[in-house]
Image (cartoon, rainbow, N blue to C red; front, side, top):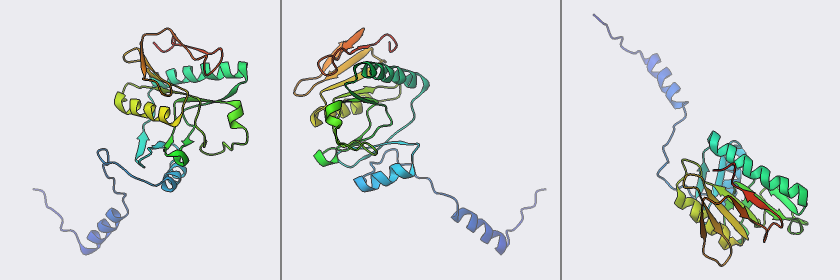
Length: 211
């Protein structure tokens, strides 16, 4: 026979204090979180291990860490851009941890997977924090868990802001969507490479390590 112990007043008080000091976790997966740019900056400082973005409407976007396959592909893409940039010395290349601040021109705060800026446009620009100018070139890489539509909307926003060449690389469908100002997006099926020479002279981005 099991005898249930009746909790004493001190036991109840101790349990109440324990519960009061435990963090409450809210499921906000189906909720849009709206924050100001100032609050967004504080969140970034307080959560350095998270990749956070802010849309022009003020919606907070939390991107989970990439899986191994996506991380490998992203490293390859970034390395190709960086190697070309070191050889050409035409600008600066940035990885996926780099944040851009477009709030002064009606945008949000975004982080492309790979980006590049022509050298003359960086003169006198402080890049210690979020970079306050629009990059010339961006790459977004779709991971296995990414929905395509939000990435396409992000690319359209890059184009609206003035990015000269944007590539949305979709390994799942072996497609690349090419975005340029004042043009419709072009979808390429299983290309071997992409010629980016009109924006980055002499640069051809190979897909040999992506497909």
